[in-house]
Length: 442
Ligand code: GLN
Image (cartoon, rainbow, N blue to C red; front, side, top):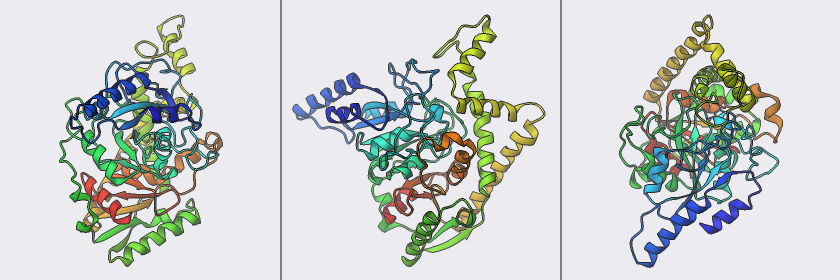
C-alpha cells in the first residue's frame, strides 16, 4: 500500500484528485496485524484500489473533477465501494475523470488532462481516464469506474487494460453521482479477466437503495473457463466496419480477429444496425436530458460551491454559470432544450422511441448470435487538446460504445483485437458469457 501511494504521489499522469493516505495506511496496518497473528485473510484483503472521483466514500472529497464540488466531502459511502471495503480492499485514491462523466478524453477536469499510459502526448480517453491509467501503470491493482456511454470501455481500450460495463442493474448505483441514470453503470477496470470476475462478484447484487438492481448469482471460475464455451455464432455490425470514420488500421485488425475466430470453428454473422449518427444523437439527447435533470440539484444551496447573488435566483444562476464547465453547461442547456415544450415530442420522445427500437434490435440479434463483437472506437486516441476544440467530433467518437449502453447490455473491452481494443457484448444478464469469451480470445 505504501509503495503504491508513493507511486501515485509521484504520478506524472494527472490521475490523482485526492490521495486517501490515512485511510489506506490505517486499513493496511489492520491487515498486517491479522497476518502477524496468523489469521486467515480474504481474497481482497489488503488489495489496493482506486475510485473514480464520482463515487461517495464517507468523509473524503468527492469532486467529480468539477469546480462546483471541489471542496465537497461525502457524507456516506456508495454501496459498491462499501462492499469492497467490507471485503478488505484498500482505497488509495480518488481518480481524475471528465467532470461529472461528461467527456471522452478526461480533459474536461479541473485537475489537468489525464495523460495516456502508453504515450503521454495522447489523451487517456474518458471519462474514467484516471482509473484506466492507474491500472495500466500498476499504481492500483484495480479501479472502479462509471460507464454511461463508454467511460469504462473506451479508456480501458486506450490504455490497454480490461474494462467491464456489466448489465445495467447488476451493480448498485447508490452513491455514484448520477449522470444519465438510465444508462449509468458501475464497473471494474483491471489487468486481468480473473481480477474483473472477483471484483464484479463482490460489487454485484440487489440493493434496496437502487430499485433498478437485481440479485445475481456469483460468477464462478469454472463458468468463465473458455473450454466449456458453447459459443456457436458471433455477430458484428456491418455498418460499423463500413463507416467512413473507421481507420484502416482498426478495420483491418478487427477483420483479422474475426478471421481467427472463424478459423477456430465459430460462425461469424454480419448484422444490420443503426448508423453512428442515429446512435450518437439518440444517446446524447437522452444523456443530456437526464443530466440536466440530475444536475439541477447542484444550485449553490445544498452541495459544494455557492456564489451569493442579490436574491436566490441569482445565487442559483451565478453559482451554476461560474462553477460548471463549458462542456457540462453545453449538456445542461441541450438537455433542457430537448425537454422543453415544443421540442420534447420532436426530440426527446423520438429519442426514447429509437431507444426502444435499438433494444428490440438487440433482442432479435441475440436470437441469431451468441455474442456481438465490435471495435471500441473508430479511431486512435487524439492528442491532448484536440477534442476540446471539437465537441461534435468527440461525441461521434463514442459511436461504437453508446448503443450497448442504451441496450443495458454487458460489454467488456479487452486490450486485443484492435489498437484500441475489442468489445465483447452479450444479451442482458449474460455477463459470464462475456468474460468466458474474453478468456477464449486471450
Ligand atoms: N463520452 C460519453 C459522454 O460523454 C460517455 C461518458 C460516460 O460514459 N460517462 O457522455
